Image (tube, rainbow, N blue to C red):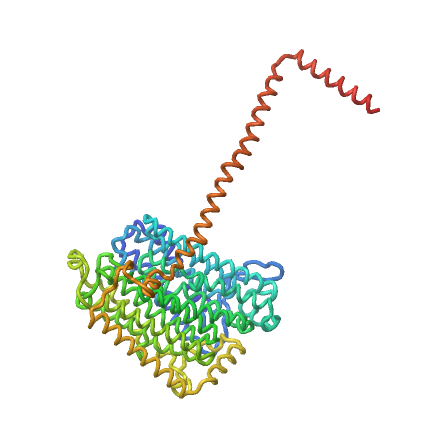
Length: 637
């Protein structure tokens, strides 16, 4: 097993090194194929490991070397193999290999082809470090590494200044969250005298329930999750991150990096169950994030911006699940979301590819007969995220809805409304893009064509996963949870208090109530679908210019003016302080330094007059000085 783990982690790093050093001299096909095979190799090895790892197996620690010891806390560079890490590795490498394959076609004409694949491989390596590390230090290294790769990939087309600003925005906002994570790690080390997950879990008994210390630790860890998983108030970086190439949006901002915060909380469940106050805060943040992002997505016209706010909203669903203690439901939705959101982003990339780079849905329309494979797979992704019965998104989202009902029916009502908004903006996106008359230019119309096989094949695979992925964890109302396979798989990584909390939630709701809630969810899906279809197909409604929006539509299109508020309160204030600091530096500090220098220079000039080389003068000065000293000494005596 030890060699398998090393190979899984190091293969993407090897791809990064080879393409980074020699990729510029190699043919593009060789570069893309090699990078894809490195990630595919990691996926196949992880699959072999998964098949030979039993559901009730205890965690396996693979120690590479002893790194350092400080104040009695020993830090090893080691990896932890358990049910949670294996699940994350399969998602990262499986979705990652499909996106690498897709990128070969999408980035074919880009002059930075080898650099792009080097960055992608580096990202996969860092993400594997994050989820396989056996302690918070290795997790933090991977955490920072994916932040760096995110910066490099968002700003990949660096010649565009706006893209560079989006990359810096993502980097800075993530650093805010990272500070919280770092503070939490320091506090864990101080109070448990350990940083590896198993030891911290064993020593968690030192914390009193809802004590100030455990609240501070969990709140700090969650601040890290807020930054990485784009929750309120640190969510505005993710929509701007759409500046990067579409495969970047699919890999980093839909399937992997943004889910790191969810992974962190689930991995630290032994701490969070001791802080009910923080859990309530997590629930509130998740609800607010899901609601705001869904509202914004209703009237966006950029196809990738709609999907970006959809990602923020779906992450909010996962955070809500964490807040009510439904850790397995959060991980289930994380997995299904990786399938259908990667599909939707790659599908949007195929649309943009066909449209010669156009991203505005107001200039699309009528594409279903031009790009048939993209259309069909995109429709499947739309069904999955909107809640089509038996599709993966419907099953995983229903698990979260049921868990929130058990916590408080009011939370279910809010999430139910958000789910309806999700279906509304996704069907709006679908109909504006693929139905009606083509609204682009004649040049775009002449350019319309289906994407090559290396782009459509990942779409087909992800579409299949979006349909059948939900079968992995069927609802509890089916034979009392007999087919809740994912929940049983993740059971060993949850502590006893977490399991008790989940069981209490399940016992709080009857099967009849669950059937009623499921029926309402299904009915809502079909009602929203028919209403949106009537508006955009029957009535042929089109997206308006932002200047024509009024009332709630304007607030949605302008995202409640939150970006403008942040810009006024934070960005401009920071820039103003910077200008004031520069002025202080120029007017005060520079002049003070210049004064000292000029004073030294002038004193040097004065002394130069005395140093004229005349020996008689030197002797006279010496005699006068000696005489003065004798006189002063005589007077003092």
